[in-house]
Amino acid sequence: MISVCMATYNGEPFIREQLQSILIQLSKEDEVWIADDGSTDGTLKFIQAFQDSRIRVIPPCKTPLGPIYNLERALSHAQGNFIFLADQDDVWLPNKVSKVLEAFHDPSVNCVLHEAFIYAQNESGEWIPKEKIFDLRPPRHGIWQNALKNSFTGCCMAFRRELLNAALPFPQKLPMHDQWIGLCAEKTKKVRFLNEPLVKYRKHSHNVTDLLGGNRASLKQKLLWRLRLARILCAGFRR
Image (cartoon, rainbow, N blue to C red; front, top):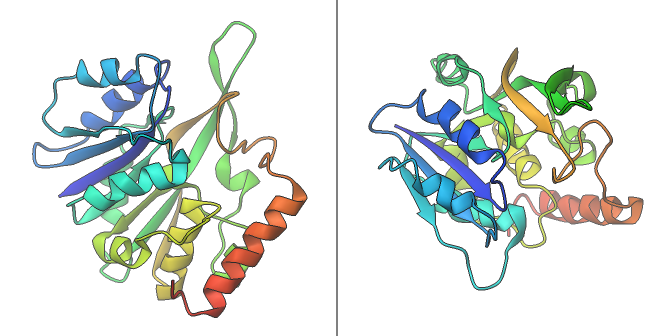
């Protein structure tokens, strides 16, 4: 069984196409958990219009949680043996699920990180390919290597339930959920990198992380994040 976990917030321009690209690849037994963080546009309306029993929407909390801890809500509900992370604004390529599950045929693999195309809009509003994520963020193994410079991009990740159990609950003040899950995976030394692009990552002005322009956080904030991660790692992943 597959659980797809997604955090949404004002994703009306993208959510329909993304869900279509996901649902067509899932079986009747699979599930899509969506945690909404208080969307004020038509995001929830478009999700409800699917009328698909595989989609389970978690209503927003009274206070917005932000993308990391909102996604944690979706992850905490997941029941599948394999957990796929999904952004609200991307598009899954038709062979994403089959290719990732094929990698999991190796019982020693507990996390898969795959390549993705980066798309940006031109002046006419058309989405055109720019680069690939691994060109900008080459994947590499190692806990400290990924603590200093993260290789993991959430929309390109899937993992076994055992890893989910190890990653939850998220530590407080976590800078990036994908980096944390990747570090938990690197601790087991069971990560597989797939060089095949399986997602269209759509770059736009509201992306939390700008893969073409770099993270918008200040140098001071990045140093604080690394210090926080270092403390967690030195404590042996204890929270």
